[in-house]
Length: 427
Image (cartoon, rainbow, N blue to C red; front, side, top):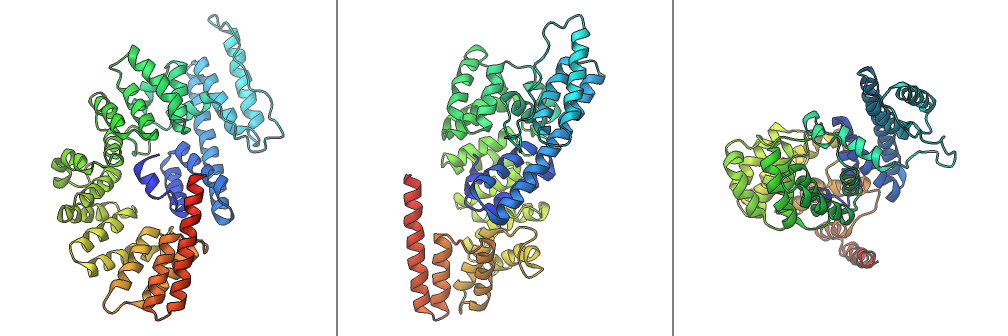
């Protein structure tokens, strides 16, 4: 799990927004993983939206794998066509496309059987189990093929035709099982120490395993062999991005500032939205507020759909003693979501909403009316399930509004939530 994934991990609305954006960009595997995680942990409207994303991702995965299978078959690459069709079948199980995919797979198998080089007929997955209506049981080969399909063509070529130990290890990383992956990658790197892909994947595994400094060492090696270009179709995955995440995970924002200052202080958006976001965060955490303000202002204008930029920019304004600018920045940031009066579409960026409510309460005199509106929006967005920090913010509002008893109740609720969270963490 990456740094910013953890930053927003308690906010299902933000996770849904990320999954929807990933789906739109074509990062189908990651979108499905996020959505399925929400399906398992939430109910109500969050679960419904997550189910919709999952269905769309599976449908898009099916179309993509079928296109690859058809192309491979037309080019006479029957083994590859069979691999793609078995992946497609995993996505088609339980849908009205299942029979057609099975027929195409059987046709390719017959072609393979007639070819002189064919020895063993490939295994065709058994018929759909009625007890599994959703068909969510993906095997390692299917998950690996889906992962490769999410990569840019040049990067995908580096992953194709690798040994089963590598494929299984990549799937283990993506499925959150880094220990097994590290064992495999260590053995593979011992055999081929200079392979940048092996170091890149071991770095990803180490990052998931909570070993950011070791991960950064692998990313250093991978950077030399893979360069700075994004590796996936969604233009999100790159060695510099993961190197930066590892530095922040390790509590070393100075390392990122030192490495990225020369290119990004001159051209803040040159590395893309994610790098600009990480760099802005690093500048804030090293108290280089003026530089952060300049970088984040440029990024907010260049990437207007990235909701984190106004939030981080407001932090820079506040640190420089410009609370009015911070408020203006955040008011503009939440305006599109709240244009209809219910703050629903596009998804509201809750960290911005919380920061804005806090700043309104810090005004002299406090803007109690606006803070109350914002807290109402917050409660609606979280379906009344306020966290500890939210409840403490409510307490500040009630105190400023002259309701000391209501403030005490909010503090008590915050302490209860904190205690429950501590128990859950221990369990």
